[in-house]
Image (cartoon, rainbow, N blue to C red; front, top):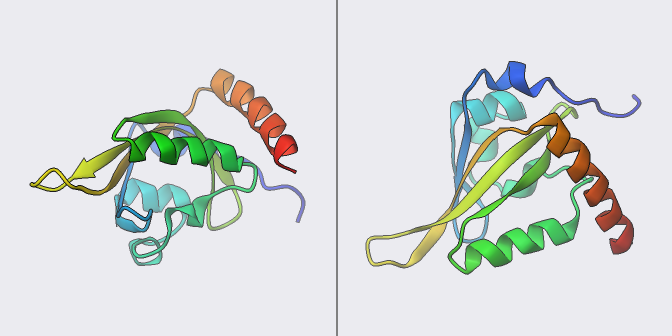
Length: 137
């Protein structure tokens, strides 16, 4: 089969944003249509599953550890993420994740918005993530 290839993010996004919501444990509670179209999963295949269903193996554990630390502290996290589609292709997204709260101010989960990542940022981040993964081994 060879190596998975990237999708053309600009073509697939068509100016729209991927949005998903999770509970406090990272289980998907909402996935917009664009998320389904780009990931290749149906809403039924996504909702109720851990968000890492789309985690690409090239993503270092440390990147997600930092993301979780940031959002669990109540802050917004921003970074580039390489995701794996259901069909084995991958796509890079410029991602923002924020905590969400109920009417009493209690943490209820997280919301993420993603758009295509710029090629320059992808190249820089891919090199950094490779170094991070090498250190994790």
